[in-house]
Length: 67
Image (cartoon, rainbow, N blue to C red):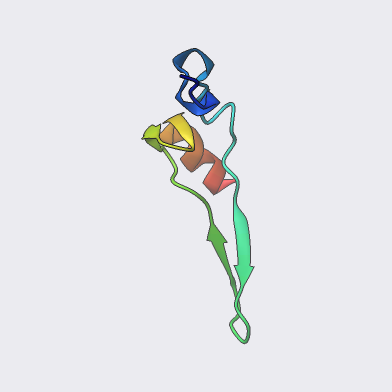
């Protein structure tokens, strides 16, 4: 039986705040003065079925948000 790459333990990459820096996007709302910043979960930890294993550092992620 052949398993997809994502289920093969030897190929699992742990994603961290260093390997995958926090990406922050902005959204402009029409007729509103200001910008909304959006990102994925700062400090995210856990195993995902399709997104891989996450072990982010909350302090590093919050520091990136403040810059």
